[in-house]
Length: 175
Image 1 (cartoon, one colour):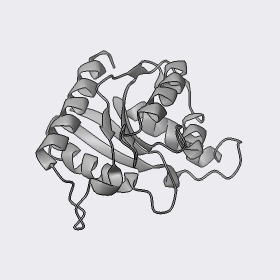
Image 2 (tube, helix red, strand yellow):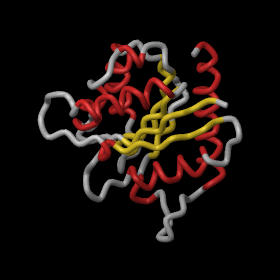
Image 3 (cartoon, rainbow, N blue to C red):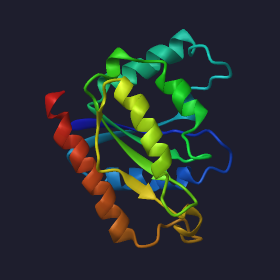
Image 4 (tube, rainbow, N blue to C red):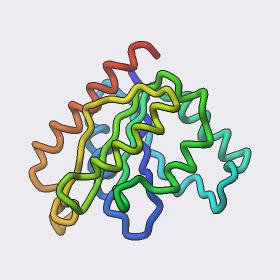
């Protein structure tokens, strides 16, 4: 069984990507071939651009090292990714090498965070991670969920998320 780390990459109040992460995790928990772990950047607060405390830095590095692959769920803010995501990612380096990573983009616009994902891929590439092309872009997020919190067109989104996870698992074979 592969251990996959799911990271919510924004700490903003009112973040719509939190709904998306809950949906992605609900899909992940239906699988019998992975052990999903959810992490929120809020669990690793940083107020300056120095590294995390030693305790949190060790915790982050251990989490990444212990997992076979990663899925980053991140909104697009002004065509980029959140600063707190970059700050957290910068607290590790060697543990990322060769690790497969997929991206779930979230946006209230029509392309679902694709511009954010393209920028984030540059950073992930610098970490020598294996970037999975089977990204899932949650566009028009303000209209994507019912008032009950359930995602609309559930089967479509479940299929996309399963496909992305399948690809992460496929590329964990080297880890």
